[in-house]
Length: 295
Image (cartoon, rainbow, N blue to C red; front, side, top):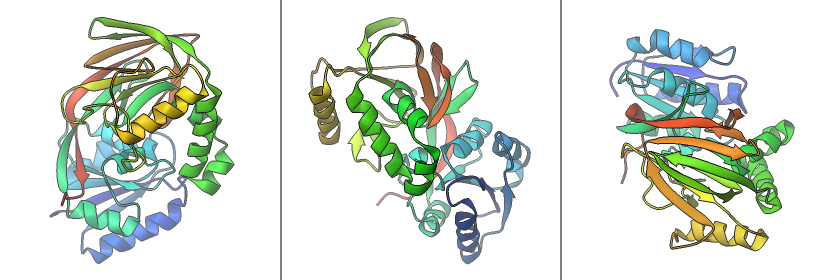
């Protein structure tokens, strides 16, 4: 990469200060001119990106998915490439892009990587964009019910532990989704509008044909009737088996309206944003993201 880099870092993220120093050292070792801004409050990363990105060849974020999406959202449509370093707990976006988890390797991979044009989802009610997914049910409950201290101590393992417990507890709700004028109604325990299809470093795939640059998002509705169904669905996602199944429903589209009875918390890229109903639309190829070169 030629030109200076802006590093926006969140000190409140897990191991924030330590990872910031490692990122600085990696940028120095690469011989790259750079500047660092440490955020001080929610929304600060978006403000910094909007005000300063034009003076840099690229922007790197170091924090959680919330910090990454503040910057990606602020720079959507501007053409400025954004690199997401894995500095949070879940690191959904960095993992989906294949970014190495060690900061030194991640900095090197992104500086010498490619620029990918990626779709984004936009949620009208919260005026927020997401890169990975938005959803209700199990994933939102997992975020809501994970103890902050446990998350600090065990990282993503805390989310996995809570997710297994929440998934097996099976708390169904009635959902109606309008997808480009097509109405879907069914009982569910989890619903996602996904842009990327892979989870946890490609350990699971959410559904068939989900790609992040096709100008569409993908509705995934999971409707297990009992605990054995939960295990079976997880096994099928692990095996990438998306044949006919009453507990699985998929449909791609550009605009979505989601209503639940009773109302449910909804999340986007790991951030709780509100309660249903809410609306999502795709913004085709709105983001330019730095990604490692593929072999």
